[in-house]
Length: 279
Image (cartoon, rainbow, N blue to C red):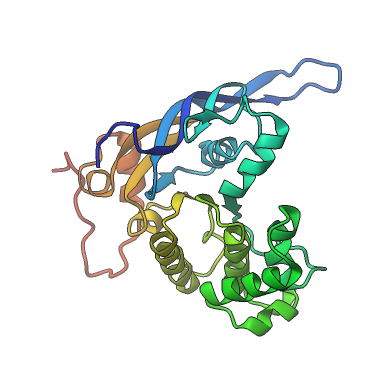
């Protein structure tokens, strides 16, 4: 694969997002937080890009800007070389089918008053995809795809474990057959034993469906096996971007090295591998 942008599905160019801090309704803000501060990045078709950084680094804001869930202060977001910022509302609505998100919180992101079949099929209904019978069949197919039994559709979110709820969230995101999926801290609210199952599921789905995946996490350990490339974000900027092997074996930026040195070693008898430049 080349390093050019010819095969890019999603690109951002000099993207900025500033949030006001302080001030009131009429008063000017006391200062601005530069959550995303001049990011340029391309995600290739069919790849998984891991986006890693501490809480507050701007990574979730960047993911939402890519989906145009929030508006940038300046810069551009392009999908298949079309600017999302220039699209009329109608065209943007149509393009929403191509771009979906899996949220961090499998508890808060599912409507507790809706049955699972309605939650998973909601996007199909909104976009007017298929007849009612076809939508029902598609929901059953999606539940099976994410490892849930068909009868799960008749139940409510509170009847499921955290890992099962995240499977429901993934099924919902995949319902409209998107090509680009943002998984925003999709396993951080889950027990470690369940995290591996969801990561394996995402990896399998990405390969089977040919998805382009932006996987956002604060834990470098989580993205290691899932990502083709890794971008490291610090204070609103991408400080390092490279192949998975480059980032994990030859990290160049001190912040990347600090993140890697904080990754726990599963076996206490196994010494942490030395970082490049360590004596």
